[in-house]
Length: 216
Image (tube, rainbow, N blue to C red; front, top):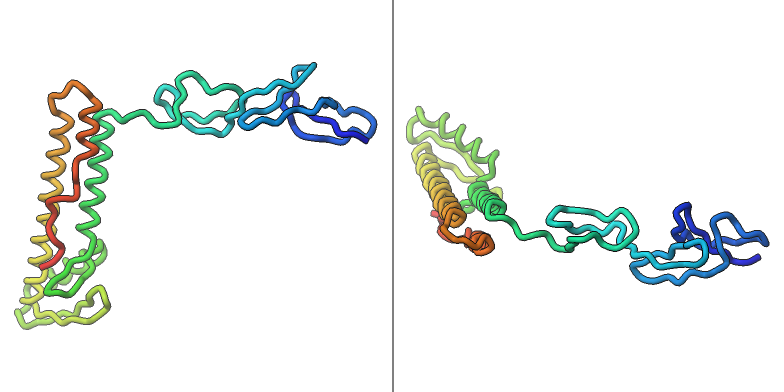
């Protein structure tokens, strides 16, 4: 028995096989050289090396592409994405701005040194309680838990003050978001001929400043 080297229907190396004294189909006794990022290809007479980038992901002329065939990388290939257009940069920054806004709006809030949750479900419950307590006398009370699950009792009047503080904080968040959004939009509309300069300015814009402190 000997070792043979098999290739597929297109001539690409498929691995070693035992010949059992008879050379199998699509095989040769000539051993191929295995080279990184290449695959041996049988020409009918000898092995040649063909570039192997199958599975590699990148971009061709700015468009996403995955290599599915053996051979050299196509013309215009790049491993890195093309720089965004000013419109794409603005959309990215505005999405990041909205995510930052929501992280504050639905985050925690400290009222009189006590931390409270302000997630969406909690905000809805708070609003419902405020509506229920509105027609009640100021001495009516409501129990509410803080982030550490400690119970606090509020009179209707105190609850109203609590809600007013949260409302002020929430409105301040939206005002800050609107100011940042206007500033980012203005950068895209700036009278600058170099698109890359506009993109750089948009992506460098600091969206973390000018927000209210989550406490009263």
